[in-house]
Length: 220
Ligand code: AMP
Image (cartoon, rainbow, N blue to C red):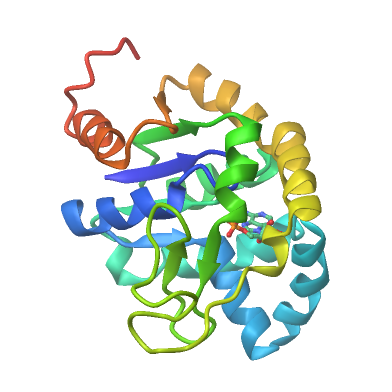
């Protein structure tokens, strides 16, 4: 099962991807996580990406496509994968189709998590991450046991540079302009399903499970 999770930053793609990984045993491919790892290691690619990410813009298509092409060629993707945060532009979507068809694959489902911008800004302002092990928290919905300290490794939690309010507004504008046209693209292909991303996490999980198990009751 090859799946794309669409949705603005803070819609809950990462959280739901983790649920799908454990339920359906397919890997999560998050281009944001891959780029953050490259920035942390200060690889040449990471150095190109860093400033763009901090401003909330999009890393050039060819850079992201290079990462995804390599990742999809690994054997753990043979039984399926979840794309989280990719594709984000129409050229990425077109090239993804080319990459997949070269190995006889295609996308089976596209799930759009819909959340309005006011809720997004509120949600993202509470997001915290462990800079050491990468575990994510939310001050209201998923707080650490000790305030500002990672449950897993005891490191002080930080707010992502690009989760500051002004940058989030820019990321949302970029999403509306460059990424939201993908909804029409995948709708025309008969693949798109919408989920209310402001529903409780368990409700969203049940909806995703229905869609992936082919019991959504929706018309394609
Ligand atoms: P995310 O963690 O998915 O919100 O991504 C964080 C940042 O990484 C984005 O704001 C972009 O700067 C960059 N990024 C992640 N995925 C992509 C992509 N598919 N295309 C271009 N830039 C991306």
